[in-house]
Image (cartoon, rainbow, N blue to C red; front, side, top):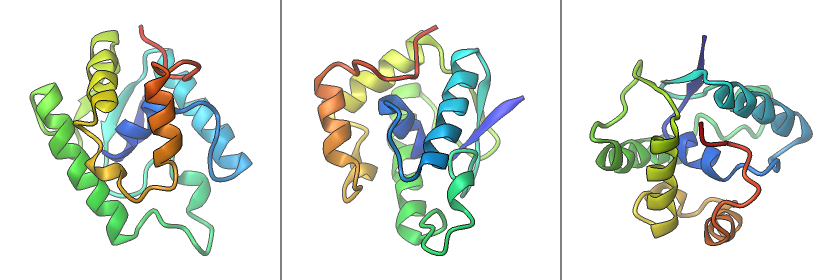
Length: 141
Protein backbone atom coordinates (compact mmCIF):
# COMPACT_ATOMS: atom_id res chain seq x y z
CA UNK A 1 0.00 0.00 0.00
CA UNK A 2 0.94 3.63 -0.29
CA UNK A 3 -0.05 6.80 1.51
CA UNK A 4 -1.72 9.28 -0.83
CA UNK A 5 -0.29 12.74 -0.31
CA UNK A 6 -0.70 16.08 -2.03
CA UNK A 7 2.53 17.99 -2.65
CA UNK A 8 2.30 20.63 0.08
CA UNK A 9 1.82 17.94 2.70
CA UNK A 10 5.39 16.88 1.90
CA UNK A 11 6.29 20.00 3.89
CA UNK A 12 3.69 19.62 6.63
CA UNK A 13 4.79 16.10 7.48
CA UNK A 14 8.33 17.37 8.20
CA UNK A 15 7.14 19.28 11.26
CA UNK A 16 4.25 17.17 12.55
CA UNK A 17 4.40 17.04 16.35
CA UNK A 18 0.89 15.82 17.02
CA UNK A 19 -1.03 19.06 16.61
CA UNK A 20 -3.70 19.83 14.05
CA UNK A 21 -7.09 21.19 13.15
CA UNK A 22 -9.23 18.70 15.10
CA UNK A 23 -8.67 15.67 17.34
CA UNK A 24 -9.76 13.38 14.47
CA UNK A 25 -7.29 15.10 12.15
CA UNK A 26 -4.46 14.53 14.64
CA UNK A 27 -5.33 10.85 15.17
CA UNK A 28 -5.48 10.26 11.41
CA UNK A 29 -2.19 12.11 10.83
CA UNK A 30 -0.52 10.06 13.55
CA UNK A 31 -1.60 6.85 11.81
CA UNK A 32 -0.19 8.11 8.52
CA UNK A 33 3.14 9.02 10.11
CA UNK A 34 3.34 5.54 11.68
CA UNK A 35 2.75 3.99 8.24
CA UNK A 36 5.53 6.12 6.76
CA UNK A 37 7.86 5.29 9.65
CA UNK A 38 7.16 1.60 8.96
CA UNK A 39 8.45 2.06 5.41
CA UNK A 40 5.28 2.62 3.41
CA UNK A 41 5.82 4.77 0.31
CA UNK A 42 4.01 7.97 -0.64
CA UNK A 43 2.00 8.40 -3.81
CA UNK A 44 1.60 11.97 -5.03
CA UNK A 45 -2.02 12.90 -5.71
CA UNK A 46 -3.80 15.95 -7.01
CA UNK A 47 -6.18 17.48 -4.50
CA UNK A 48 -7.36 15.94 -1.25
CA UNK A 49 -5.26 13.11 0.16
CA UNK A 50 -5.13 10.73 3.12
CA UNK A 51 -4.18 13.58 5.46
CA UNK A 52 -7.20 15.64 4.33
CA UNK A 53 -9.66 12.78 4.89
CA UNK A 54 -11.01 13.85 8.32
CA UNK A 55 -11.65 17.39 7.06
CA UNK A 56 -13.55 16.57 3.88
CA UNK A 57 -16.99 16.39 5.47
CA UNK A 58 -16.72 19.77 7.18
CA UNK A 59 -18.57 22.76 5.76
CA UNK A 60 -15.50 25.00 5.99
CA UNK A 61 -13.08 22.44 4.52
CA UNK A 62 -10.28 24.28 2.74
CA UNK A 63 -8.79 21.24 0.99
CA UNK A 64 -10.24 22.12 -2.45
CA UNK A 65 -9.63 25.87 -2.33
CA UNK A 66 -7.58 27.50 -5.09
CA UNK A 67 -4.99 28.80 -2.61
CA UNK A 68 -4.37 25.23 -1.40
CA UNK A 69 -3.97 24.00 -4.97
CA UNK A 70 -1.44 26.82 -5.47
CA UNK A 71 0.44 25.62 -2.38
CA UNK A 72 0.65 22.19 -4.00
CA UNK A 73 1.99 23.68 -7.25
CA UNK A 74 4.64 25.79 -5.51
CA UNK A 75 5.76 22.94 -3.30
CA UNK A 76 6.10 20.50 -6.18
CA UNK A 77 8.37 22.92 -8.02
CA UNK A 78 10.57 23.67 -5.00
CA UNK A 79 10.77 20.09 -3.77
CA UNK A 80 11.62 19.05 -7.32
CA UNK A 81 14.73 21.24 -7.12
CA UNK A 82 15.84 19.37 -4.00
CA UNK A 83 14.96 15.85 -5.16
CA UNK A 84 16.01 16.28 -8.79
CA UNK A 85 12.51 15.70 -10.16
CA UNK A 86 9.26 17.60 -9.77
CA UNK A 87 6.82 15.20 -8.09
CA UNK A 88 3.80 14.59 -10.31
CA UNK A 89 0.48 12.84 -9.77
CA UNK A 90 1.07 9.09 -9.56
CA UNK A 91 4.75 9.35 -8.62
CA UNK A 92 5.86 7.30 -5.64
CA UNK A 93 8.42 8.47 -3.12
CA UNK A 94 10.07 6.63 -0.27
CA UNK A 95 10.81 8.80 2.72
CA UNK A 96 14.34 7.55 3.31
CA UNK A 97 16.73 9.12 5.80
CA UNK A 98 18.47 10.89 2.90
CA UNK A 99 15.23 12.32 1.48
CA UNK A 100 14.06 13.43 4.92
CA UNK A 101 17.40 15.09 5.67
CA UNK A 102 17.42 16.96 2.33
CA UNK A 103 13.86 18.16 2.76
CA UNK A 104 14.35 19.23 6.38
CA UNK A 105 17.57 21.09 5.54
CA UNK A 106 15.84 22.94 2.71
CA UNK A 107 12.80 23.63 4.90
CA UNK A 108 14.96 25.05 7.70
CA UNK A 109 16.84 27.19 5.16
CA UNK A 110 13.52 28.45 3.78
CA UNK A 111 14.20 27.34 0.21
CA UNK A 112 11.07 25.18 -0.04
CA UNK A 113 8.64 27.29 1.98
CA UNK A 114 6.98 29.55 -0.61
CA UNK A 115 3.80 27.55 -0.19
CA UNK A 116 3.83 28.19 3.56
CA UNK A 117 3.18 31.91 3.26
CA UNK A 118 -0.20 32.70 4.79
CA UNK A 119 -0.53 29.31 6.51
CA UNK A 120 -1.84 29.46 10.06
CA UNK A 121 0.87 27.00 11.12
CA UNK A 122 3.77 29.04 9.66
CA UNK A 123 5.14 30.33 12.99
CA UNK A 124 4.90 26.95 14.70
CA UNK A 125 6.66 25.22 11.81
CA UNK A 126 9.37 27.88 11.79
CA UNK A 127 9.95 27.33 15.51
CA UNK A 128 10.10 23.56 14.98
CA UNK A 129 12.70 23.96 12.22
CA UNK A 130 14.73 26.33 14.41
CA UNK A 131 14.69 23.62 17.10
CA UNK A 132 16.13 21.12 14.61
CA UNK A 133 12.78 19.29 14.25
CA UNK A 134 13.01 18.05 17.82
CA UNK A 135 10.00 15.92 18.77
CA UNK A 136 8.73 15.52 15.21
CA UNK A 137 7.02 12.21 14.61
CA UNK A 138 8.32 11.47 11.11
CA UNK A 139 11.54 9.56 11.73
CA UNK A 140 14.60 8.80 9.67
CA UNK A 141 14.96 5.21 8.54
